[in-house]
Image 1 (cartoon, rainbow, N blue to C red):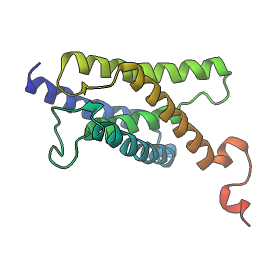
Image 2 (tube, helix red, strand yellow):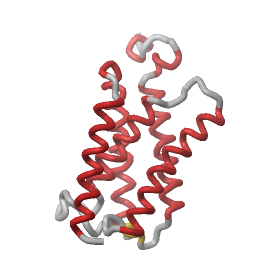
Image 3 (spheres, rainbow, N blue to C red):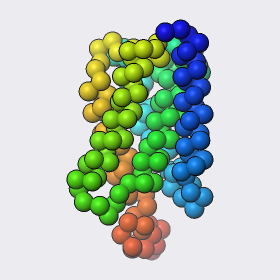
Length: 169
């Protein structure tokens, strides 16, 4: 694949993700989406850099910060955290465990599917000592950790209890 196609895919990811956020984040839940987004950035920054520095994955063609960081700014710091924000906003909290499991699976499989496509047909990502199932597992776990944090941060919303600040009084 050409470098031009890689740039087109990366720019498209920015545009599509931005449009998804604009369309699917309600104004009254922007704070909630923002917390999920920032928390996911912390996770992806830590684990993304670890995987890249250990040379398990490399990102040969990157649009942003090529000399500053070896990981993909687009995926690690914008697309993936944005999708996590949408994941947490629309999580089926009152559904049974099977529906929740399917929800996790679908979200993780979509991202892993796009990553497999990128590995096979572009120079955006290259697996050195890595496989698609490691990506699937780590994404699943990061979604789970993010969900735990989201529930903890918005405890009053989920338990109909007083908010965290009033608990300390």
